[in-house]
Length: 132
Image (cartoon, rainbow, N blue to C red; front, top):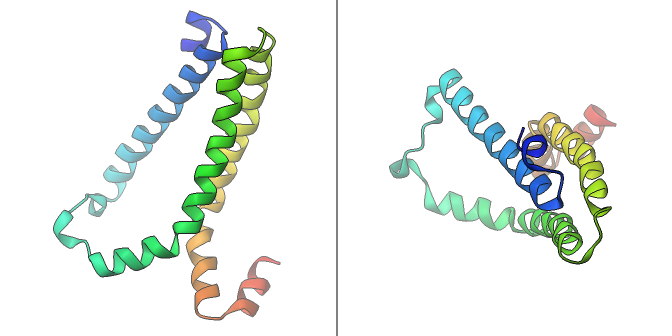
């Protein structure tokens, strides 16, 4: 709605997209808590030693995700600053790809811990048999 109500400049395309993603995140959070009340955050139940192990294990994944997001955002910022109005067309065109990637990530997300666990215990053959 923000996109059609305000305009199609690249700035408003980005603002509309960020707003949509925030709304989607909050709706998912609210619905998840209603379906599974155990999802409430409790600071006292954090196992800090285990959290450090997990954080160090996921460090490369975090760096990869940051680099990917920066690559996508920097293009839009550069186009917004120095490009012609045709950049808005590119920005609108890339929204479809981003939505498809978000949809596929949502579908593949539950499989990542399973595959990572199978790899961690050395069950590579089972992993390959399940998904190849």
